[in-house]
Image 1 (tube, rainbow, N blue to C red):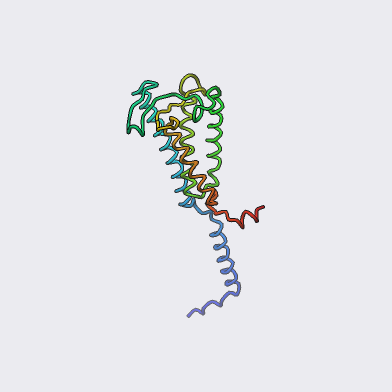
Image 2 (image 1 turned 120 degrees about the horizontal axis):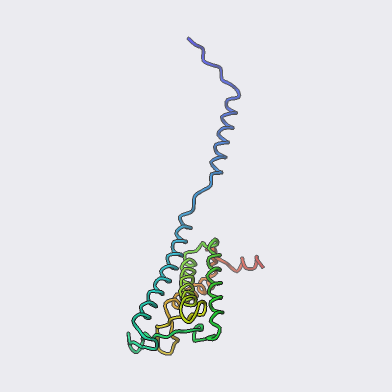
Length: 204
C-alpha cells in the first residue's frame, strides 16, 4: 500500500492565487455591445432612412405626374397637392441665398451624426432620426436639382389652408423639433438622464 502524499503547504496559496488570477482575468474581458444601444441605433437609422426615402419617393411622384404650378384637390378645402419649387427656406425666406441653406443642412447632418456616441434615449433617437432624414431629404434637392449643384430648388407640394406649402422632409423636421422641445422641457438629456433643479444648481 502506498502512503498518501503529504499535503503541500504551498498548494492552497497557489490555488488561491490561481483563483484570484482567473477572477481578475474574467473581469478584464470586455463586454459586448449592449442590446439597448443597438436598439437605439436601429431606431435612429431606421427612422432616418424611412423619412428620407418617403420624402424622395413623394417628390419623384410629384415631378413625374404634375406640372409646376398645378393644384390637385385631395381633401378639399383642407388638403391640396400644389407643386412648386422653393429656392429659399420655409415661407420662401432667403430665396437669393440658396447656397447658405445647403451649407446649413450639411452642417446639421454632420452635427447629428457626431452626437450619436452620446445617444441613450429612445425619444432622442426618434427625434434625431426624423431630423436627419428630413435634413438629408431637402439637402438632396439642394445638391442635385435644377438649376445647378448646391443651388437646387426644393420640391414642395403639400398645401394646407393659410399655411406655407411644404413637403415630407419639412414635416419630419417639424416633428423632430417638437419632440426635442418636449424632451428639453421635461429635462431629458441626450444620454437619457433626467436633469433636475438640484442638478442644475450643482452644475452652476
